[in-house]
Image 1 (cartoon, rainbow, N blue to C red):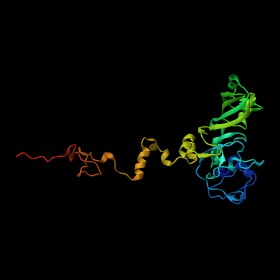
Image 2: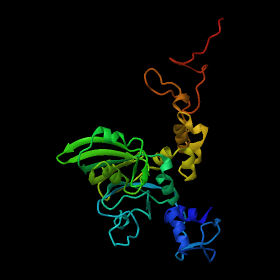
Image 3: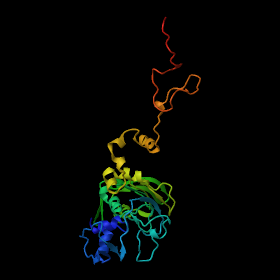
Image 4: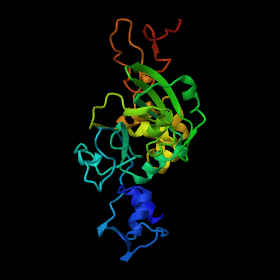
Length: 312
């Protein structure tokens, strides 16, 4: 495994940031300080970051977080502004963000303890739609919005298709719903400014299948392991250890498989089909074994078979 990927999988940072750490001389392998990320490491190699051993990689996890306005999405801000990671709930481990929201943007951010998972989710190739609620000063018509469906070039930067719908108009402001798939730096603000709109509030309400819903600012909520695996697909989920072995077998896809496993786990070997039918008066049969099937030549619906008398 490449050293940058190993550092990212340990949850310290993204792969791109790990490459910068290596260039800065912060990473060593077996006592040798690295100057290039083109190094393969093995499980027994001793990797140090800033003189500390590389943490053991934990199972990949994902959280939804409602970023308040007025904080930056970075671990260290040169300007000394408050960061998202300064006020996370205390029960969260060390996490990194999937992409970023700028200082004045609020709403949904995905957090993960796996740098490689963060890199996978934030790639435009993943194709997940980022949806925003936008309040902007100014007016715009449907023809202008339709011009964004095939992408637009603003100040020499080419942006991909943008989905925009007008929700309401309040005084001088217009509320819009905007959907983008690339998430370039300040993309929503720059594209709308190209149409003469000045954004004064920007809220991300969804990132792919994950939604902000009723999360309050500053709150975080874990995404269930099975939900994350379903959204990633079986191949990618297996790479991040999100699928158990028995869940990926053909038998696991058969109806009732989980129910059968649960019965086996309890050690319950009895089944209602193996018990003899009750008597008409509702009392249990005294001569019927509670375990095992009953024999047709022993029982009838109306009780035990009577002995046949021989004719004289």
